[in-house]
Image (cartoon, rainbow over all chains, first blue to last red; front, side):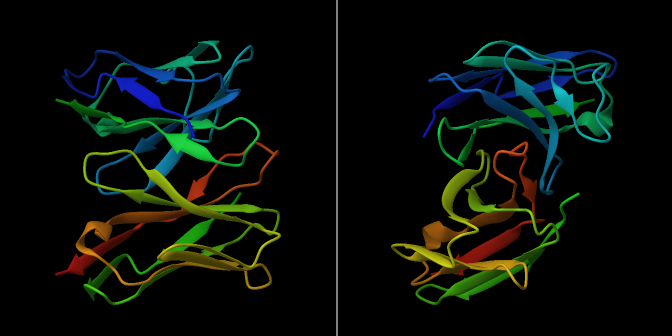
Length: 114
Length: 113
């Protein structure tokens, strides 16, 4: 398995501002993912972040709104830009454990936009 | 793309009873099917998974079955306990072809003591 931490755990932000979420893993992993979970809903993939390449975004998510960095094999950031109340969600990073099929999730960042 | 349907959306059982949650998927290329448990305020926790070359897998009180022909898979929890109360998500992915998980809508399981 993998131990994943996220910062911040929660935040309340003003509309129009940006927030950068950090994801740290206790081991080197090739594939990292960012998901959004809107209140009371399921998880939706935002993008796949592989070290050494540009992030791949899913339909409905764009780089200008959700820029992602992946500077090394244990760390990634997701920025939520120009926030609106509709961006209020839990943002989760996950990793594909090396040599397995298993994906593990961090504890999430609970974002409220006012 | 893949579409995963999950039923029921809520499930209430008495402690000690069994609980069954069912999922169907649309993409026959999917070959990996994990189940996650999410407690309030926490991230999803992987509890069991199954690959497409296996029909059933068991881990203590939890089991998962897969029917590739019908494209459905199920989670079975026996001898439920109050600490099993949580939201459960099924998911599907194509391993080594992106590995992106497509999630079902979730099932809120309530175990009454």
